Image (cartoon, rainbow, N blue to C red):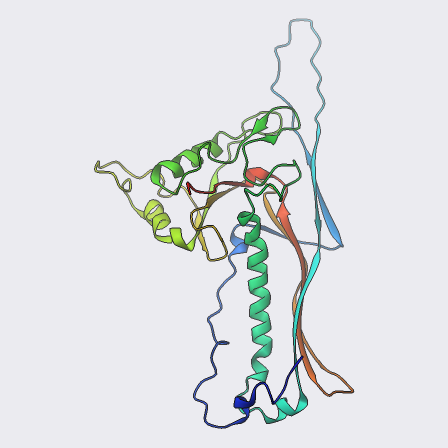
Length: 299
């Protein structure tokens, strides 16, 4: 359906003071702060996990050295998908419209594709506890039974779901410091970014930015201050009390750009309609669950 004189008649009349709803401020992307953004050069990308080696054993004098083999780990495939949106304008509408609205459509398309990126990216966190969405190890993103290739399991979720407080944030931060690899060797993960919905914006800022322990009558220093390199407050998180910590683990949340967003325009020969479009091609997900720790909150 084309934008024609009939459905935008007011834009053909002089005297309008303002055309609104297409003039919101643009902001820097949020997903690039929590995703490892990579460039893709093919239809799909595969990331293959491999294990290290276990602890060394005591070698008896004159005895043989114990030899072990590493294991092939889990594999994740990222299939690049094209996202697109367009708008059509009749030639008559373009000729007669008085407020330059038509020429603002490329900006509106750009804003829509940016919102699409954010929505797709943060949906991985929105589905972090949903059994319908699993990763290469067969588990949800944040769960308590991530199977190790070398045996055993790991958890990247609070044992008891909890709202964001001084205690729960300290507990989850401590959990990730104790993380192990697929051979059960300590990997000394470090927290990088606290990710919260807008409902937890002020709670998170109090916890991260105050010098003393929040909500305590004592004069204890706040050990969380300075622990995180960044904080992301995302309006794209749908659960108002779920919160997450991203870590410095390799191959955690991953984003592959196959083709950056491109704006195009052209005219149809028969109708003389003007068409605007935006297309982009990318894939996203996670390979290593250790890149994110989280909890759905107490509710």
